[in-house]
Length: 84
Image (cartoon, rainbow, N blue to C red; front, side, top):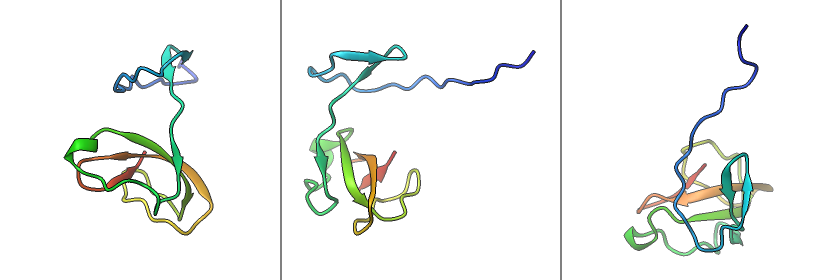
């Protein structure tokens, strides 16, 4: 019998505000922002996660673009804010 669901183990950075666990993974209160309101992505912010409230047609692992109505998580890769 095949499993109905496949779960991937995701390694997340630990932040002090982690208080709640969902499926064994800490759930975080992500800061919400528009794309234009994000701080400049730099090596100092590498790995930082934000919620963007105005993404336009986001594609996983793509650079986030503002001007839309999609709310999605983005992370800084040291150079750009990336979807996912």
